[in-house]
Structure formats: structure tokens, C-alpha cells
Image (cartoon, rainbow, N blue to C red):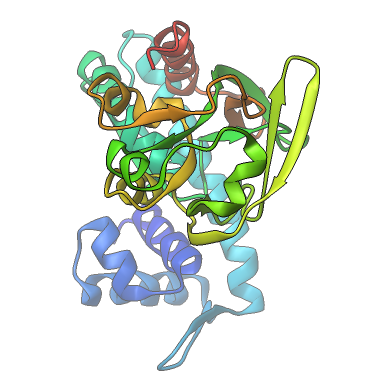
Length: 296
């Protein structure tokens, strides 16, 4: 059996902790995943994984094998990409991670445009706001929205992320408009679990104001809050990239437009500039160009 494929299967099992999840991700049967891991253990004459009915964990030998396997797989990907660059054709697979809301709002569309230009390339996009170790998860590029990106990563800014208060016309008709941010505690507020769950910050000229809100509904994803506010659930603070279309269709209206929330930046993050593959460089340049005009 192909030892490189066995290493790839083993790395996926070690990362996910599941034979079934690995089978689904690599589009092979669970029996084939088990066989690849068993063959790798036979080749190395070492037990790599401890298997129980509830979990899969690495042995000491498995820890060493995981590091070496990841290095070899990365080396093979670099060889494929460098070889293919002679023909000006990008190949291989890139692994990306991004928040659900930005992937839904814009990144999926931009990736589709990029792949249409590079038909030999594949992209695996993992969505979610949880922090992952890019090296351990073999992530080539992370798209994150932050005011202070991880200083251990290389950060390339893509666009400014503005947020504004919004509500549906139905909610405004029923509950009225706040005249000042200090009126917000008397309204039904929807908040993001990870950003300003109980306190919202506003600015007007040189004035800064912190408002403690009583969040009636919180969620860890902005697309969920968008659906809730469209349904008349209350007032929420949302990024403009997610709701521009709804504003133009009068499905939402901006609340307290003279007050703004602090802007953040949308970054592309990657572990190192060394040995950055042609595919990652091409995607980075494409993202910068696509988001330069902030279409939202």
C-alpha cells in the first residue's frame, strides 16, 4: 500500500480522533482507514494509536510518527507545487479556516472565482470561530476578524470590518427607536457570545461610550444573529459585510447611525513567509485584490 497515503490517513485520524470522521473526510471506507493505519504500524513495527470504544489517542511512538509524517507530507506538497509552477499551473490542495459568517457572506464566492482560474487546485475550507493551531491542523491560511491578530502569525490585512446596530422594521414599529445608546438596556438586544456579549462600545467624534446591555439572545455566530434580527427578535450589532443586501432591500434599518462601533480588520493569517507555496501566494494576492474595494 502507498505509504504516503497511509501517513495522510494516520495524520487525519490523529487530528480528528476518529476513524469514521477520517473516512468521511477522505472519501474512503472505515475499513480502508483502519487498514492503512494497521499497515503503517506494521511497517514501523510500533503501535501508533490507543483505541477504545470512546476515544483514539496517540502513543509516544504515534506522537513522533505524527510530527515526521506531517513534515513529509508538507515536503511532498511543496515538491508538487514547485514542480507544477514551471508550467504556470497551480496544483495540490489548500486548507483554509474562516468564520462561518464571513465564509457565508463573501469567502465562498471569492474562492469559487479563484478556483475557476486554477482548475487543477483544490481548497478545503473549515468554518468556525474556534482558535486552531495552524501548523498542527495543517492550515495554510486563516481568515480572521480581529483588532489584534496573533503576534506569532504573519498577518496580511484584507479589508476593514465595520459593524453597526440594526433592527427590522417590524421590531422598530412595535418597540420604537432608541434615541441614545443609553436607551439600549430597555430594548431587546441580541449579542455575539464571543464579542461584546454584555457590553457594547460606541464612538461619536471624540466621545467614547460603554453600554451594558441585557442580552435576551446570544449566539456564537453572526449569521444566526442575522436571522434572529430579520425575524424581529430585537436590536443587534452586526458586521456590514453580512447585511449590506438586507439594508438595501429595507429588510433591516440602521439604529443610532451617528454612533459607530470600533472597526476591526479582516486578516489573512499564515505561519511563516518561508517556503510559502505559489498557490498560497496566488490566493493571498487574489483575496487582497477582491476585497480592496470593500464591496459591502
